[in-house]
Image (cartoon, rainbow, N blue to C red):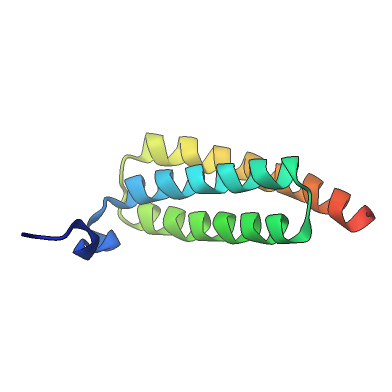
Amino acid sequence: MAKHSDTSWKQDHPSTLFSNSVQKADRAVKQAMSHPEEIAVEHAFNAISHAENAFENAEQHNEHMDLVEHNKSQLELLKQQLQEVQKIVEDH
């Protein structure tokens, strides 16, 4: 019986991977916004960084570019929100 955990993430479509990583970044930024603490901000930055890598990967594969562009604009919004949270954290 095959174990699903053996499935490599590379078998996922790059656009799906990007979409999922943007969702994770979204959750991380929302967490940082509701709990403006250094660790939450750091976690969100890491999630955004991961999503940006996934974007570059999707772009190289020319995958579902309309979906990729939508997620890219969401990622830009998340980066702006996170910068706001970082200012709050630094001011404390």
